[in-house]
Image (cartoon, rainbow, N blue to C red; front, side, top):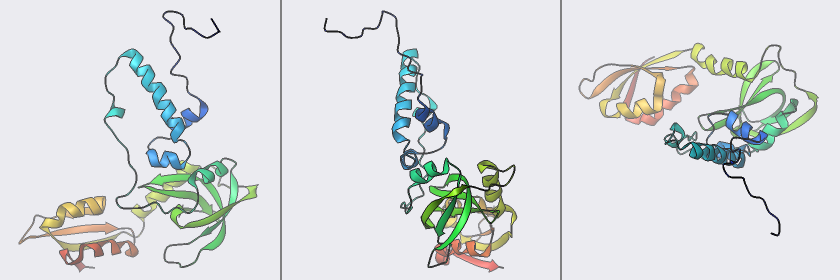
Length: 241
């Protein structure tokens, strides 16, 4: 009466069908809620999760790893300072254009203009980076220091045989192989756990404590990065180099 739709007995909705945006939200693995929102995919991800949950409920299965793991890529006490929209930039990159960017390098007071050939975006440790060639040399441009960008009419001039993943691998491996600086120091024993959390894999060697101090070896890719040790104050004493 008055029209309507009724499912036949035993019929089920196809809860596994995913729309293109939902598949895209699931295929970009490792992003947390905040990063999905920055890309404009949070709503699609929610819908995809509901469809998967409906299918799981129909099978009557118990909890999964997704119920037991939460991902938060934001750094501790690190507010978001991006000046450009990550979602807008990602959509503009779909057309593979060259970009004119205004970028402020570390230590510079003002941004300078340059034309780059982008491969895509990368998210690492709560920060977004534009991965691009600058005069045919691969570089990372932190979105925190990207004042603005403009898409150009000409397509990006990408190097033959290179894509986002190959260039990203080259860039992140570079600090591990370039100009390793080994710092030898004494660290107070009661600051050892803190040092492990802050320094991570840079803390390569720790000797047994003696008189409340531990001899340690810390490795950095360049001299500028050694400034990280200043936060330990008088809890750390560097004696070489």
